[in-house]
Image (cartoon, rainbow, N blue to C red):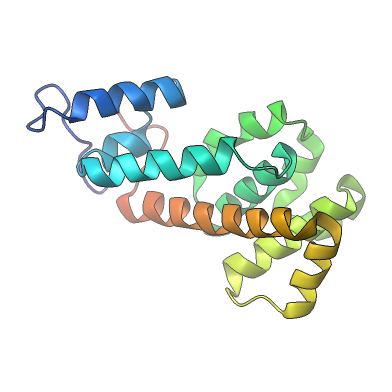
Length: 178
């Protein structure tokens, strides 16, 4: 159960909220619990939607790398809602079930991951657990992915650490009634 109630959208006080709700549904397919919580602050919900839509849909980073990083962040932070939302997306991006099942202990099954995926997961683990990234690790990521995708990967990892921390702070879970 969420730590705060979800926003009541039956009679919003702010007339600007309904067009935002319509945009959320258009871009996400439904009004997810995350956005039901964010809509307590329409400016926050609007900025979140804008930012994370671009992170998820407009980067050059391959979708499989993006989703591996997102699901790993969710595992590391104990954010089950985030993992549940992104497992189907990871599958659509071509990540197989064996790799997804191995994520919590991916280093024990390196053969399931490409070199780029192992680097992405190492960066994800480091950024999420330690925050500071050794220059040698970032140099390896840059060498494998190029500067743009190295920056995009770091941005995805940072963004989804933000998401999981918000989800866990507010207690959002998939089984909540919206």
